Length: 531
Image (cartoon, rainbow, N blue to C red; front, side, top):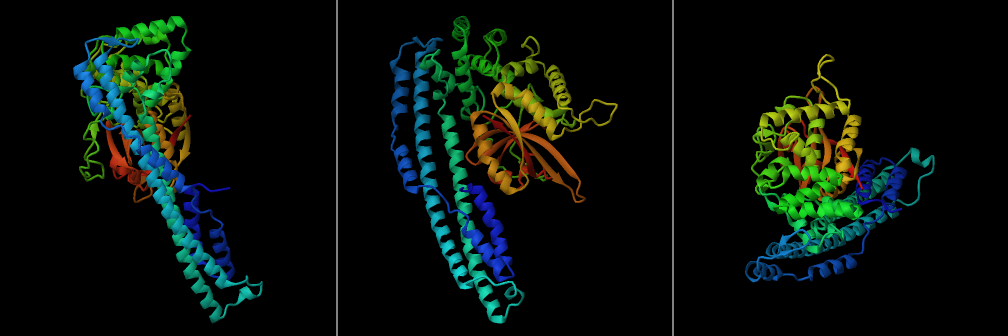
């Protein structure tokens, strides 16, 4: 059975140590043969190159400009689609979709070509390393017998040491090749998953809405922040809402059509569909729609979207003295942060990150916290009370600890409790259960990155646990949430009320302080959404 790229990388790292430290002929032979038994990098580079070039030949340049010109100059003020979309808006959205399609096909092609080049180099390096190992094995000859192994004369020692040096270099080349192949495979998986998630209009496959309506819903972003990072409907939302539309009765479909037709802005329509995607009945969606109907896009974003990603949020502005990023964005409602305990002082990080993550995927829930029972409030003090009450409820749901037995002040939650709350609070609204996985060490973190990035690209938040130890060995722990991904960057929501971006390398190699502080450098656990 062929090992995974991560397993191969890890195994060769272990065998590199075994070969360099082998102090007998038979031990060295065993280690060399074990290394030769590790499979070479696999993959058909010619096929990858052909596919990559094919994708990049899809020339859509200039289509956006032509479509946009039609939208601005060639269309009357007419309405199209089942839900009354302005034709000029629909055509502009089509132009943007074509532009995104062009970027996706070119980017997907580049990912495949890059993988092919890296894999070709890795195979060559691996082959060179294997030849050196085979040469070292030949030099050693047959195995020593039981008594031969007791004594090694000077000539025998010289042969062994020379073979060990050759083998060490050879296995080092194989390990280098395995690292390159593993990194290239993960990067290709990350980029292809991201580009696939960007093919947004095709995610909503329902026949109950016209292509124009599906296109417009996929194209709609919130009013503030970079539109690319603040689309209202995630890829997962688009898929789930389409599936739910197809399962509605004729009467309920007619009610949904009317709600969408009566919506006054694209943002209102998108949030109506997001509520349906979140698992609510048409009765519940109708009640929700009554609360948001006619609200302007800024009001909708403020009340329904806890996290806004700014256009400059990925700028590198250096670090604070405590190791955290200078460039962070406060996430707040009317000036009151989405923060644990209302002020950052309580030990309710698991519950607080879970509450915010649910609010990101469930607009009905978000409105209940921001706008109150009637959905109309704009009161930061009332919001804070409801937010903290929810954090406390979820903390109790996960059987969290308290500062003293006579108080109800939260003081942390174990991973069993965290598994309970993320599956009760988030999973019903994304359709994916969460599985707990420990990630102690760089290899574990590196291996889980593709799963994390695919989930986040689809719009499913990923909870992670971070930790650190002081000079006395005392541990500190904290819970944060991965809520965005772009290139080799991960967007982290910290329930201290902020978001910031870190790199894949930060996640893998102990750089989580950038999203917290120097007391919490290491990721130690993740909860991965299971499709």
